[in-house]
Length: 109
Image (cartoon, rainbow, N blue to C red; front, side, top):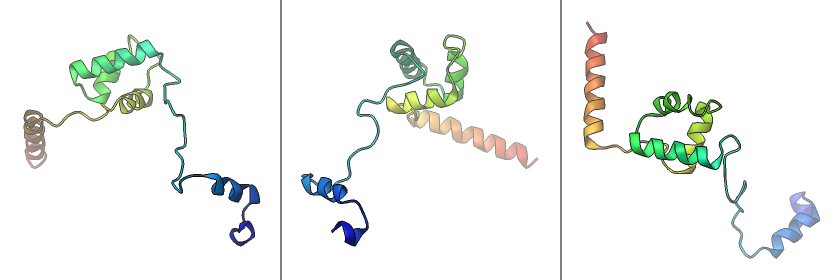
């Protein structure tokens, strides 16, 4: 089989020992930040949940407290905790649409 597929025989033997044909997950089993400490990460998560500010606003508010915080490390932290996207509430959506309408009218003047 290894000759037919052009792969190493050890690879075929590993495949045969597996109980499932599903690909295994790659990466760490417990993802964690290499930039933020556990306390800093908890502070970021609590801040985002309390304020519901957009990413850039969170970044500018937290950088004085966590100087080494970057936009990408903040985004990865929020993704790990499942809060990278703000909830779409009806009120927030209505305000967003009003702002878009205002901008569109300002451009066409």
